[in-house]
Image: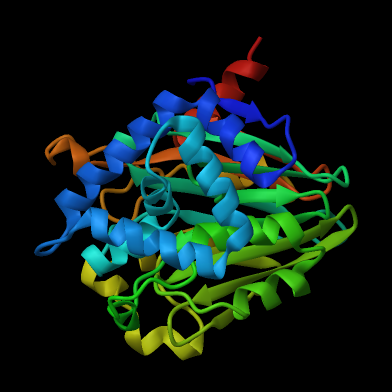
Length: 360
């Protein structure tokens, strides 16, 4: 198992934090920018002027997320890149929805709420294999002593994470007919970071998610945990939404289709294939009403390699390299310890590492 790259910021001001990050990871940020240029070109249906859309993304971010814009500008200055390039990274989900409203089967998320125990939250982060070297585990201190941990891409402010209040966020991309507006809404990765930076409980996090208008459908699964229990809800964001998906019998399982009533009719998951429904049904069936009390139990359930609807994804080498898809990371959130457990690759890689660690 490859070692997870990690970085802890040492400065607190958003702009200066960005400068430090950009200077320290100049090559990685530039590589990520170049990788997304290739992806936009490969995925776009028809002409797609990435420079123009990147500039538009920067203007939207400045208007909607001024604190995030300071950090983005800092990363750009530190890395020696135009600020619009870093803005495009942070709005990459929104820009991909504009370039091509369909997607690919990707992440699976499981939250278990065992009675009287802290929540268990695990996600496979599935994305393009060409991005496999372009992410890290980033620790972000705040002036009042709070700390945010996030797994994210170089140059992107946040993704999967947890904060010092015990609030965790996990993401699954969705696709909806109302995504095709040609507009850029509040970038979902910046929303995740905003929640991690500021939300003190699940209710505040949900209110933040409901207060913004998005243009790229996403499920934000929000977890709040204590040692003796917790709560979880998935906020299904889409331009006409959101909808809420509550846990059932101590389990909340998310893949890449809408479950809440407001958005089902416009869900585009079927245009990608049956994989999302198969993955969710398979996980729920395997758990059979159990709410596991340990992340390793969930990871074992997610070690599935079916050709259609497999949870643990490996690249299809018959595709052109830029479009090959894989599970890049497996992440477990500890809402009580306020930490992330991160491994590269899918559940099968994590399982092998755990097995070798306990073997005589």
